[in-house]
Length: 171
Length: 119
Image 1 (cartoon, rainbow over the protein chains, first blue to last red):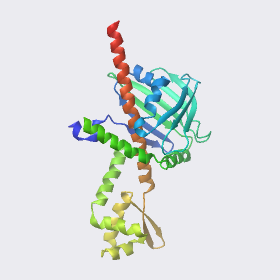
Image 2 (image 1 turned 180 degrees about the horizontal axis):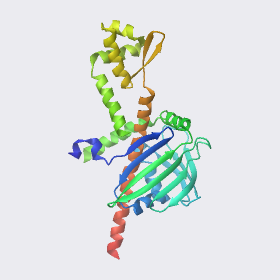
Image 3 (image 1 turned 120 degrees about the horizontal axis):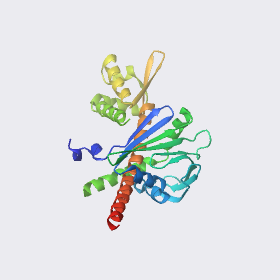
Image 4 (image 1 turned 90 degrees about the vertical axis):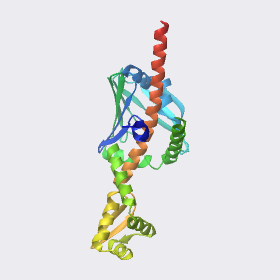
């Protein structure tokens, strides 16, 4: 297949699936060994560079993380569509180098917070990532989806599309 | 889910490829209408209009509700379509993240090779 003619095939596929009433699963293969991919997830200076993509208008205000089992994290970021900066915080339930990261998302309150599990699986020099978000209930996930759609992300998506067009033109 | 989302998109484009169905959407933009009213407006049989509305409904562009013997059609995204749209937005956010992650991992790889050569 000619990958260049198909925009969907050109980018290594990111998939997002609602795996069940209360679960979301995100997958992607990154071109590099698990050791280095894990480093980019667990070193705060590297993590904040990709977790809040500029192409989305996101910017980091502050970020602190103690990436150890039992350690905490707190990320404050800004999005032009939101008047106030947004804070995300929680703690690491499991940090197993090169293979598994598990953390809580406590900003939504005790009943609404999801648990995020990331697994790193290396094969032929590339790392397959599976990000699993487990919500406490169907209602909690439904609500998270309803909130997200009204925060004005769409405007940013439009900008992202423009950016992709510009990037495509350069290639 | 990407496949699922693509199939919904395909269904939307297929639904919009027909002039009558585009007309129905325009009509519903002015207000809700029953299948009978739509059939009259477009000079069609009830069965024919039911088919068109069915296609629009499957694409998530129209929702219908049966009250008594009357089926009312309404413009709007179905829950399924809304959820699909949300998931597609979320997928784009993650794609942007992973594209940058890919670059950082590439930097780390190059640094390693560089150091390896020096030593």
